Amino acid sequence: MLAKVLSCAVVGLDGELVDVEVDITRSQLPATTVVGLPDTAVQESRERVRSAIRNSGLSWPNGSKVTISLAPADLRKEGPAYDLPIATGILLASGQVVADVEDAVFIGELGLTGEVRPVRGLLPMVMLAAARGMKRAFVPEQNAPEAALVDAMAIYPVTSLASLASHLLAAVPIDAYHREPSAGQPEPPANVTDFADIVGQEHVKRALEVAAAGGHNIVLKGPPGSGKTLLARAVPSILPPLTTAEAMEVTRIYSVAGLLPSNTGLITNRPFRAPHHTISNAGLVGGGSIPRPGEITLAHRGVLFLDELLEFDPRVLEMLRQPIEDKTVTISRARQAVTFPASFILCGSFNPCPCGYAGDPERECVCPPQLISRYQRRLSGPLMDRIDLFVDVPRVPFEKLSGLSGGEKSEAVRERVGRARQVQSERFDGSPGHTNAEMTPPQVRDFAQRQLADGAGDVLKLAVERLNLSARAFHRLLKVARTIADLADSDGIETPHMAEAIQYRARIE
Image (cartoon, rainbow, N blue to C red; front, side, top):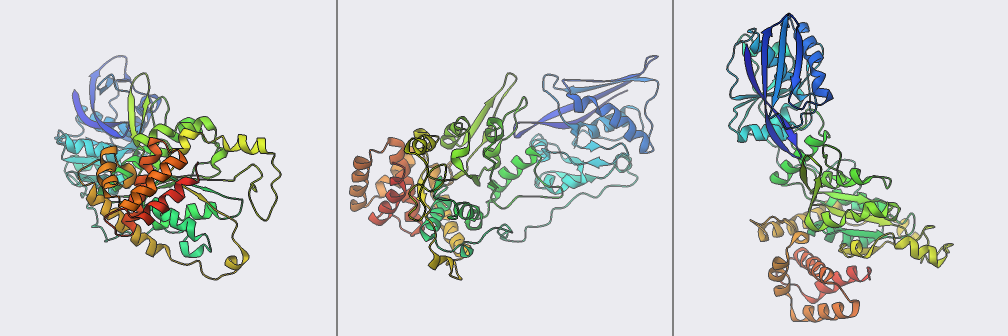
């Protein structure tokens, strides 16, 4: 007998429907064969499915040749998510289960006892199935909150193969999973440093507020112990929650990467990724024989923090140049090319020299000038040109260290950042960009250059001439000034807004 069950694969961040066809024929040479470019995990599903069927009180078709075809045949199949559809197809083809499954998709890994285990990448699979007209999805119980984010599908959480067989036979039905309604505005991430807990460095907090409001890249430079890392790790406390559309993007990325915890639905807080400086090219931008997202994609709509920036391999850092500009990264392989989103705030920190004390008024630097120059050249000019704000983080004096209050709380800063982001959302409604940092040249002309006050235009002209700014730096300067004006609730860009933007830019030259 022949049976067909629908399942899904993941290609990049998108789903792809897979037809699981099972043919069972009597044979003197019984065997089980899987065809359709299966990887090792799919090949091994034969043993998992056989044991799961037997241990669920069902029968394996002994004395038969079982052929399992995964179509389309030219698409590489990987992972254990095909266990459940293969087992369902065998039960249908052997006549142990009689049911109409044309409008259903089956996804899940099987244990030897018949339990159904969670899989990664479920969200894009269910999204595609809904787009192709499927009405039902049978998924692992732990993945049900994730799958239920797709409203157009009825989600059935499956705990075991035996319970699925009982449901298909209409003996003991499985109740559909219903997502709980959202409880209003999500809470900021727990265990994150509050700005009020950091004494001093008010000018750095202001720069971080500007970077968070406009989605700008920022670099902090200062001696060891001045608070660079602590300040950077406090950035999540001032970032507004993700919008619904952004949350779906981020949740889909983490689902494919296998980093979405079980029984977790929508991710509402912006990602904060801090890879170690020994990271490889593939770890940072993504890669592999079957391309997987890297740290820059996992930081999408959030922050990518590179602590000890100059300790990273320069060749790895240079790979950030194109993603910073295009907000995407394309990984090409012989079989396929995959594009991942990469719209993130780059936040870096580094010491001014190998010993860390170049320019420090309290402690003498022991590095020779040639070593300092070679050390700072690890960050190339083209990459520096893509950084919007460059801030010195000096040593905190004792008078401030001994204070009991760090000043303004992150909650107040987050409200200002949220208002500025709302202004930008309305400004760029209908366009791909969400923040001032993502403005295209025509948008820079319409929303920044044409909004310049006379005095601000004169200051900008002087800065371009004196600092010898590139065309890219000119546009980035305007974007930062636009963000500062948004934080001040100003329609136009006034002279103080432009002067503050130049203050951040001048440190690079």
